[in-house]
Length: 371
Image (tube, rainbow, N blue to C red):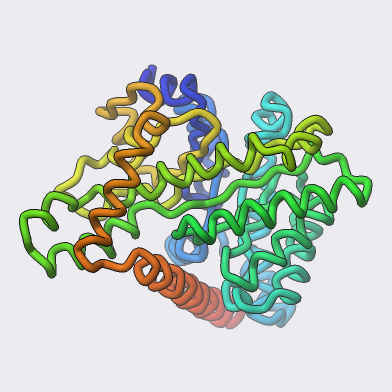
């Protein structure tokens, strides 16, 4: 059953679901996906929580309790989301144990409004880790310039981290350096580094969205020939960088001490352009030691008609480099594209967070008046 998903898993890809809700947990749907569809982890974001909270009465009892206590909307939000993450982590705990702490993880992110504040990001990451109180979670920290030292500091505390909003190869190298430094410090601090996990969430579909827009504006045959190719090429080059870092002399003693490499996680893998196959960012990025976090629609598409055919990355580094070179040859600046995407990514996360706060405030007001 679900042979495509089993093959993905057998090829070394950890299948994570990019969605979480209290209904999904309580109905047993999450456990079912773990049992039947090889799901081994969960990622969340403000948009996911906003849809969950606004679309279900399952949260009403807790929101009403929070309302009568007159808690702030920020505190209410944290109580609601950390409860879901805690319960989700409990569902996934058997996977965590079976994979020796590698998978079975649920991610929760720091307030994205802190993306450019290193000290506040560190403080909130520590608070979330304590509040959820489950060792099989990951704290999401954005890969902004200010986020890099926060990543190191949080890992040094023995806290597992999901680094999010990575678009550029240069920033990804900075993320890996921050990770290795964090593991070095964690080891020096006496932490069991075998228990510390990290993934680097390298965003995929948004790269095609931005570059395709610029290619279409050019409109030449050469430009049209590159449509839908840049995102996969960018991710493949990220994996090449990953292989170099985690086969280095610097990493060797940490590996010997039981540390696990920071795995690349392909994020934003739902295809935005209907002209492309809906499993593009799954089938074309299969390679061992990676995570693919999929919206449920993409997960179902892969299960139904995906075409996994083993490693789709390692033999394609030269082609991937040529795609990026050809894009730049047309006058499209890679550096500008990835900076625009990072800036937009932070802004979108902030906007989603504000919308989430507004949703929670509306529910507090409504249910508080009914109490």
